Every structure is written in structure tokens, then in C-alpha cells.
Image 1: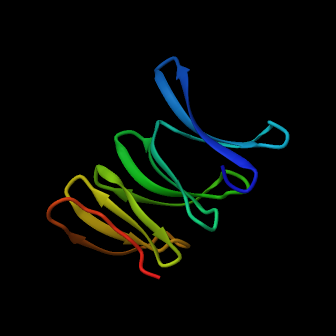
Image 2: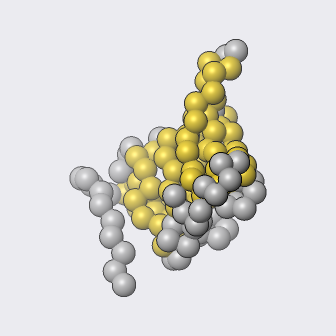
Length: 130
């Protein structure tokens, strides 16, 4: 729930299996505002500012970190990932993702450009210091 909107991941049966949607529903009216479709949506994250990011397979087996327009559901940018472990932190400075190879990558939250990546050993955990 964010700013009077509920964001839910929904599975839809198709003739070739399933596809997934991130659905934005207005809590005041119950009406669907938009939906973002992908062959699989692994994770959904909403930043404190309401920015929406997903880890998704839009052309399976390719995995991407994708920023979604919170008003329209349109894709703003995408960047390919190795098989992903998940988004670890979102801030105004970056979107930080760890893949299954334990590589930590930082993406610019506005443009999606990869800023850097570095291998990590062991279990990853991130916290922002203010």
C-alpha cells in the first residue's frame, strides 16, 4: 500500500502457461489503474518516494531490474541481470542488487545505467546510513 494504491502481483493462465502482472489498484475506488505484464515477476519494491522497481523475466530466460512509472505502469528503464538474488537497497543514490553469483551491482535510480559492480563473498546485507 502506497499513497492510496495497492500493488499486487497476479498470475494469469495463458495457453502456453502463465504470465504475471503487477497490478495497481486505487484503494478509494477499487478500480485498476494499470498493469505491467511480464513472463515472471520475482520481486517488487517501492522506494520511500514511491518509485517502483521489479525484478522480472520479460523475455524468459532473461532477467532484468526494471523501473515502472508509478502513474501509468509503463516501463521507464531496464537493465539485464545475471540470475538475481534480489534488490537489497533502494535509495536516491542507487538501486543495489545482488545476483546468485554474489555480485553486488549499483544502478542509477533515474536512468537505470549500471554505475558499478563488485564481487562479494558470503551472505549479502545492505543498510543505508543517514
